[in-house]
Image (cartoon, rainbow, N blue to C red; front, side, top):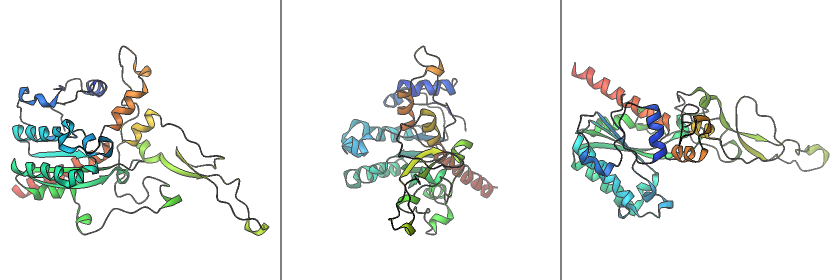
Length: 302
C-alpha cells in the first residue's frame, strides 16, 4: 500500500506524518478538497471527527460542523471515485439523532454509487490490550457483496460471535486468550498485556476459624510472571505503553518537535495523537481482507 496524500490539520499529527512519510504530501483542510489534484486512487480511508456523535460531543450530530465533515468525506469520494472506501467512527454514530445521521451517511454513500457494509469491531480481539469499539464502514464502487466479504468472515456470517469475556476478576488475564485476531506486527504488544495480579498477603485459611479474604485486584501492564502486589497501584500509562495499546511500534510518536530533539518530545501531544488514531491491527486486518477480495476477483476474471 502506497499512501498518495494525507488530509490533516492538527500540527503534531501532521509532524508525525511528515517524520515517517516525508515524501507524501499533506493536503491539509479537507473542506478545501476542490483545490486538490484529482489523481486516481484505489482506496479512501477516513475517520472524520467523532465528537459530534459521542456523548462528549453532546450528540449534536449533523447540526455540528464537525459532523458535517462526514458529508465532506463523501464529496471527496464522489470526486475521486476510488474502488474502495473505509470510514471509521465511534459506536455512538449508530444512535445519533435516533440513527438518522448514520442513515443519511449510508443513503448518500449509495447515491454516489457505492455498495457498503458496516460492522462494529473491537480492538481487544485484534491483539491489543484495550477495549476499543469502533464502527467501520467499507464501501465498494457498485457492489455491496465485496464490501461485505471484507468485513464478515464465514464464521461471523454463520452466527459465531466473537468470544465473550467473563465478568469480574477473570476479565482480562491476557490479550490473546480467546482472541480470534492477535497479530499486531509489534511483538511487544503480543507478550505485554494488561494483567490482573492479587495481594495474597491478607488471605487467611478457612481452617483457623477466620473468614477467607480475597486479595485486592491490581491492574498492571506487565509480562511474564505477575508477582503479588501489596496494594492497588494506579499510575498514568506512559506514551510508549499507549503506542503499544494502539499497535504502533515503540516511540512512533517520539519525534523532533518545536526545535526540540526527539528524546525531549513532550508527552501531551503524543497522548492526544494516539487517542485520535485508529488501532493499527484493526486497520491492517481490513487492508488484508481487501487484498484477499481483490485477489479472489482477479482469479475469477482469469
